[in-house]
Image (cartoon, rainbow, N blue to C red):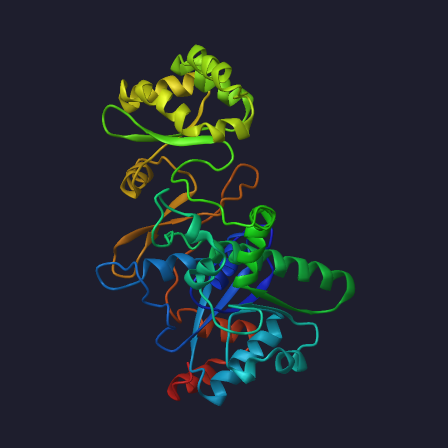
Length: 394
């Protein structure tokens, strides 16, 4: 694909979300990413969600725009092919565990200026995934209704996605350093560290250290400010947020509650232009605003909030997003042709260069570019590639 990284080559030996997200991000910016899988596909090749034929929307979307090669990684010949590719290309992203032949020192012996970024679970090498890491940083214990109860796991693999974007950042930083110094780099990135950095950088750990107790659950309320969901007369729900004094003024004005909220301020000696005060009195404020929303259907609410420049969003299902995409409503989304003729939905890069998202990337097919890559990168002849096929190395 074209893009600012055109001409950059990367080998990716990674599965599941974080590593492939990093490779996909770089591919959509123009890098030539060669994805290496075992014959028959790795452990994520058929991961849900899948289409009617059992082909994975997940695998296809995360690996679009990459060139796929399939190699017998248990054979000496197969391993030699992969090692030769890595040495020739000079940049590797992996999340490999327990393969001594792909240890960094073995790879650097072949290519001293190699850039090698390895995604890990924990920094000490122990395995971890999104669900175990998120449980360990306290997020499920502050998620959910105020009544509490069991931990609430959210369905979005947020730390995986942040790790994937950190992969692309780490690769580009190492490339810049190599361009200045000629030195390669071994960069290790642990999913657990990404999660810890996330909650620490938001100030959440500092707050707990200061108070000596975990933050309480507070349902859909925005912590430390005013924001909560409201039901409209047609049953639709909207999320309304007022982070700034201007947003607060817009909300009270459009709902006609300025006077009653001013009286509340006087009665409780509060200043609702302050975020902390709006949060402290969130339940009372929500009760005052609730009738305004219940008296209007969602279209009227939308029109009036937009006209007043209130910060808000509509709750909608993914079926609504699919409908909007089919009508051309989201430029960042694109169709994803599947091998059996079904069509999935994927995304272009959210980065817009000169106003354009760029191409989403071609749908991958396991091993489709094996011959092409071996001929182009390793300059193997047709006869040599044919013999590899005969021996079922590729």
